[in-house]
Length: 124
Length: 302
Image 1 (spheres, rainbow over the protein chains, first blue to last red):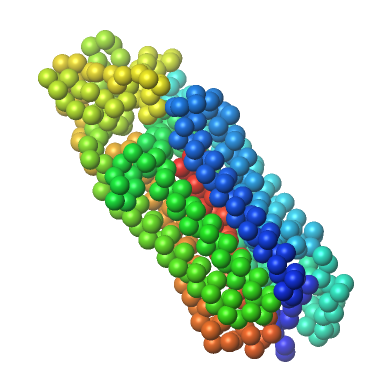
Image 2: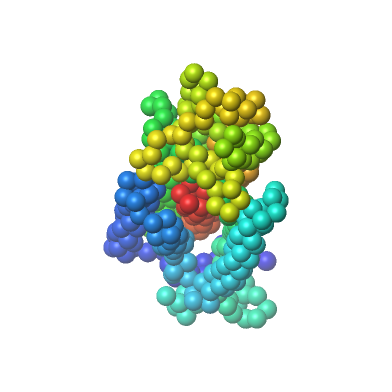
């Protein structure tokens, strides 16, 4: 029986030099973007509260949004998930996002209640 | 970009359904499913970090105070070293995607160059992490006092057990703190926050109170799984577990990259007619970078 891991399914598996140039350009663009976002995050972390006196909620949500932007570029461009079929893309992304968002919601909700209980009853 | 329509697949290699629903090879799909399960593990770790961070919000340190050292330069460089590590990992992710691109052009020399650089970047990252662990376990110059049981100060305020007190110096029996003491809201107790209000002086604890506080405390340097000079012990536990588990992934990624690099040099994939193996280990390597992006935000920044 023939090994099916040797068979190529994706159209993107081979390309010529000209197409490669376009792809490399995109890679360099994403590189610069990821680096700039990281620098912005570090500057915001170091100077955001103590020097610029920005509200913590604003800084926190900026961090979260920038992280999701970075993750999106890594997954969709570097990991080529954006080039896969739509059905495959959502098979990967949708169940995971749904589960993890619920987990985050339920855990943080519970933790905030436990924080209050520590003060109300002196629990550890 | 639909692969299936323009690429004919031999009938004998198709599964029973007769067509490949995702138009993706078996190996790549299984790598994605493995990454999903791995992402759930990391998601669980980071969510539990969030849980304890919210539960012990008042005892949780601010990471830019903890991670402010740089090799050879000493302290006073908040988050710079972590930022450098992040940058190294991003760049090694870029060299990996360039290796994959070279593979698509069947450019063997290009694949060797970029994959080798990826391995070098991975070693740099693992080495950086080793230094950070060493520094974290070793501890800061002054160390800290961990309060063993509740201490009632003469003005009625209470310093709770497990509070970590950073003392800058003991002078004439008074304690000079790095951080101010702040009155807690509803309980009337005293918290030692790690984020002093801008421009405020460190608070002094005087005479007998200072004595009481020191008598009830243990002086420690650095951190391990049960005690931590930087703050709540769980903060150290999560440092070791999250960065340790990620570092293990980086290390195994480097090993797998080396194995594939040997295959590329031997010409195994060139003979096969495509470099999909490079693409598959590339997926794993990008995933390691992806996880670090989240660790960086949720452990070091938030």
